[in-house]
Image (cartoon, rainbow, N blue to C red; front, side):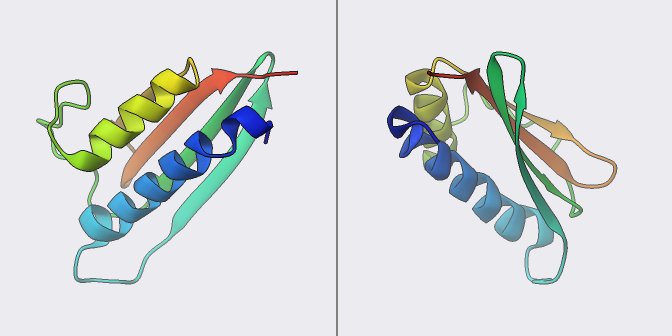
Length: 102
């Protein structure tokens, strides 16, 4: 990671991982969580995918009031990046895309 990304990217990763454990698997503490950080041209793509229940259909990541979503939105903004949560097959997919710094 570039030093300017060393705080924001791990915070997003940890929040996505925590959400997978808490919301994706709940009391069933067993499951798969995949994490990838890949470079796609001039952008980094952090993906956290779980095989749990998936996000609720009414999830609003832009207007949600949860502390976790506020942190993720703030960190994505700090990185000049974009964050999205979508339904996987199965589970949830969280993606953070942000520019490569040189």
